[in-house]
Amino acid sequence: MLRCQCGRNFGSRANSNANCPRCNKKTSLTTIKSFSSSSELRDAVSKANVPDEIINELSSRLASYEKSERSNEGFTSDDINKILSLAKLPDDSITLSSLNESMIKLNIKKMSAERLIEILETSSMVLRNSNTSWSVLQ
Image 1 (cartoon, helix red, strand yellow):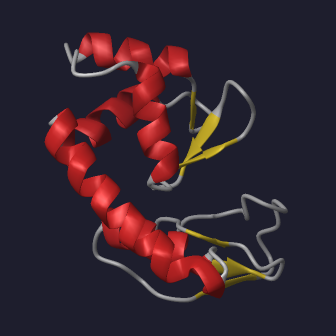
Image 2 (image 1 turned 180 degrees about the horizontal axis):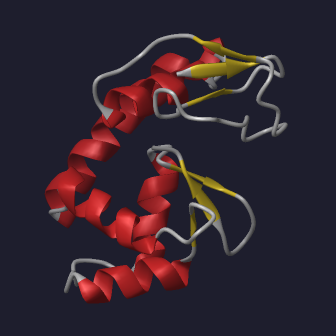
C-alpha cells in the first residue's frame, strides 16, 4: 500500500512505477505496508481512505455485503482476475464493453458487466476514471 503526499492511499504491485490516482504524482509516494493478497490490500486501502468517524460502520457493512455477494453471485477471485486480465486495455484501464467481451470469451453468464463493475467499485478493486473507464487497482 502506498500513500501519496496528497493524502490518498492506493495499491500497486511491488517494484512498479506507480502514479497517485488522485494527483498523478509519483515522486511523493511512501510505501506504508506490503500485503500477500490483493484482497488484504484492497481492504487496507479502503479503510485507509475512509474517515475515522465511519470506518467501523463501513467495515461491518462491507463484510456483510461481500459475504452475501459471494454467496449470491458465485464468483471466485479467480473468475474476477481472469475477467479483468482479459478486459484490460493497453493503458491498463477497463470499460463496460471490454468487461462484457471478456465475460463472453470466458462464457461467464452469472451477471452483467454493469453489475460486475458495481461490485468491483464497491470493493475498491477499480477506480472510476470517467463515466466509461475504470483503472484496475491490482
